[in-house]
Image 1 (spheres, rainbow, N blue to C red):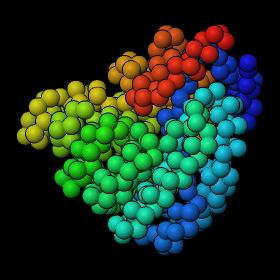
Image 2 (image 1 turned 180 degrees about the horizontal axis):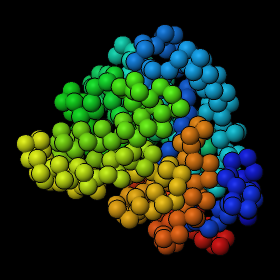
Image 3 (image 1 turned 135 degrees about the horizontal axis):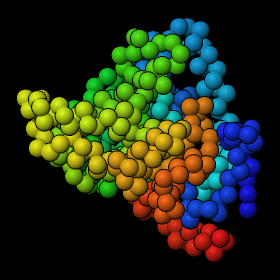
Length: 367
């Protein structure tokens, strides 16, 4: 069966809209898509401090108002179900792994308020996914402003809500996620075997990035590179070899410029910290999504880190998302069918322990 992506798929060189054949992959899983909880937004304090959202910290009042209207326009899609399922069909996505919208980290609130908001977001995501088993899989959030509360909510989300992944930001109120105060969180994530999905929200020092959406275009991948650098050099990945971590937006700049990290490690040993291996050896244990828009960049990820380390994503429903994730993989001409199958969904299914045997068998039979 064919699904025509009339509203979302990019035009070809001849101006025709792309047609997605869902049966061409054994399984498709979107590792990067969002939901926001209206209950949490209603409960949260109305006035956020200026630095709470780095994306908006350096914009003009007019830009901030434009952003507010844009976020408001997403309500029907990011909060509800019907549009979500319809667009999954259009994109050729079998399963969405639904994570909180990054503006619902709420790290800027007092710890107790952060705990309440995290629970509310997690309960709402779990409830939505429970109504559509087999199509939607929930991902948690935790109040990282307090490590003990974060650990408690991580345990609850796994044991009571059945979540197998958690989304965190690249920093906590400007502090690094490698900070020793968060050691309990990383230890618990490893113990529970939960995938940690790291998603930025603009660069925290973006004074030069206020125009042209640069705090998103440049700031987000820069934030991810900084976070990954600290996770490596501060020894988090050394101490927790069992951690499963996926970096949004193709790993940011770090995944594509690791040679500079390695060169510094080799030429300036005084800056190595305590790590005994080259940064690239730690980087090779991470996962990266395909939200890079360009098939050459996706192919470069696979060439450098392997098809086993790349997961299909969309960043749905934001305008910076990838509207045609299956088509993007189709355009990766250097990848073979087995590599595309892994990236499209089999890697995510393995990471999250999804029971997809019946789905993959049914699709294989349909082909």
